[in-house]
Length: 332
Image (spheres, rainbow, N blue to C red):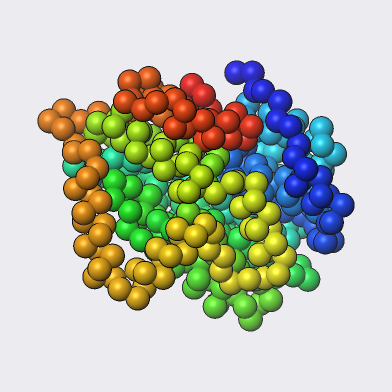
C-alpha cells in the first residue's frame, strides 16, 4: 500500500536545533505509525540511534524511509512481540546494528472497542499479551544493557484507561491497569540499579487511531463515538506535542507524565471521589450502544466507518493525523 509523504513540521525542526540528548541507542515498539513513530522521530531529532519495532513489515519500511530521509539513524525489525522468542530477536537486532541498548520505549498496543457482552476471552488475552506481557518480557531482556548504561531508561506508554475504567474498552482497560501497576512497581525496584522508569498516562490523541482500532457489537455506532472522541480538539491532543512531552519526560527521568487536561482531571477525580466517578461512568455506559442480538466481532475501523452515522467533518482532524502518521486506511 502506498504511503503519502509526511511533511516535517516547524516544531520538529526546532527540536532538531534544540537537541539536548547525547547520542544513545533507543528501541521503540509500535513504531511504524502513530505515537510510536512520532516518539521515534523526536528521539532521532535529539541524536539517538533508533531501532523501530512493529508487526507489519511494509509499514516499518515506510517509517524507516521517512525517518531516514530526515537524516535519522534508524533501523527496523518486523516482529510479533507476543511471540516467546521475540525479546531475544529484538535485542539481538539492536546489538547487531547499534550496540547496547540505553532507552526502551514500550508503546505497542491494540485498541478494542465494544460492550462487554460482545467481547470474547480471546480479546482480553490479546490485550494482555500485547500491553502487559510483551513489555514485561522485553524489559526483562533489556535489563542487562540498561544496568550497564550510564542512564538506562524505560518509558512505558500506559493510558488514562489504566486509571479510569472507561466503558466499552474493557480489554484495553484491563491491560493498561496492569501495565500501569507494573511500570510504577518497576520504577521503585529498579531505581537501585540506576534505571529510570517513566509511566506515561495519555488521554486521547489525534493519531488516526480510530482507523486502526477493532470494533465489536454495533460496530458503526461504536466507531462513531470513539472516532469523535479521538478527533475533536477539546477531547483529544495533538500527537506531535505529546511525543515531545514524552521524550522530555524521559530525558528528565520523571516518574510519571499525564497528558491532556481531560486525563489529568479524570485521574484526580477518580482518585479523590471514586464512588462519584463510578456513578458517572455507569451513566456513560448506559448512553453507549448496546451489544444487539447478533453482535459483530472484530470489525476494522475502515469497515465500520463505511456505515457509521457520522458526518465526515467530525473526524477530519483525526483522519488527517492518520494520513500523516501512517495509520492504515484499509483496516489492515
